[in-house]
Length: 365
Ligand code: GDP
Image (cartoon, rainbow, N blue to C red):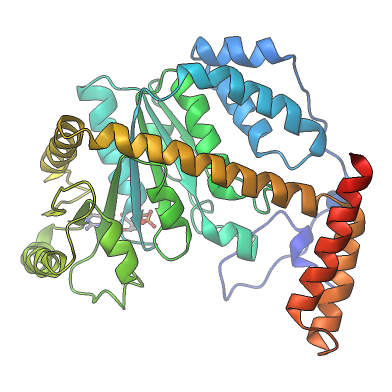
């Protein structure tokens, strides 16, 4: 039997043959989805019910056209209660220790400082390969079951409005549910860092000692955005190497121009496993927040981010409007063939599609 990988619910590592789907017709079965009235979601979220928050985020991530209005209404209702958290972006290549770091730092926050922490993940791989770097392992087990934490994996692949936009909206819902600390995790290999940077207050880059930047796949642009570079796995035999790497990154950071915040990015070492250095990392974040608040930069950046949200929201709505149109979708597939066979340039194809798109819109008005 020929196996269609996309139709199996099982994902396996590269090099392992994909097993057959137990029910090859599983993809044709429609999941029954229950939807409730708006106040069920808003009341549930505002009273801090994790299950309702989770259902609401599922709605926000939904690709169903019929869910869009309700999702929008929930976001709108939560908006007045949002904005009161500290948002921290955490990035680094797969294997650097992001989950372990978030689990350790997160547990410290919820237990020692009685914070309510939400962890949201952006996984650029899911959109491309329909597989997930972040999702295919058990992550943050202790944090995920802690009553004061909410851990939400990446939005599903192919979200209509773009994964980053969904995360931005999920942040609003988490804040309305009383989470005063939000970690946004992303894999430091793709485009998503710029977007994460545009939705957080502090952007932290995790690195390893003993591997060059290129080896770690970290682009200079990502380093330039970081408010701190933390060398993880500074334990055992690796401690000295971590110290050396820290110094090297500190030197490299000096070569970059001072960021608009006026804060000179810092470097530190830590071990997410032993938790050594995590108090210092948190102190660094707190110092930054005091600095940014005292200089008016915190508010300024939040305002700039709101304006960026407008832009992102328009882009996302246009994208949604365009690609949810069945006729345009089919035309797109046809034109792609013409592009591949050199009958048409991509610009001409885009022109044709846009013309039909605009005609459709005009008919609706
Ligand atoms: P992620 O892919 O960036 O989320 O990385 P993980 O948190 O899954 O960690 C990848 C591997 O590195 C796991 O085997 C962890 O146990 C290990 N690891 C993470 N942090 C540390 C650390 O501080 N020290 C050591 N020695 N290993 C670590």
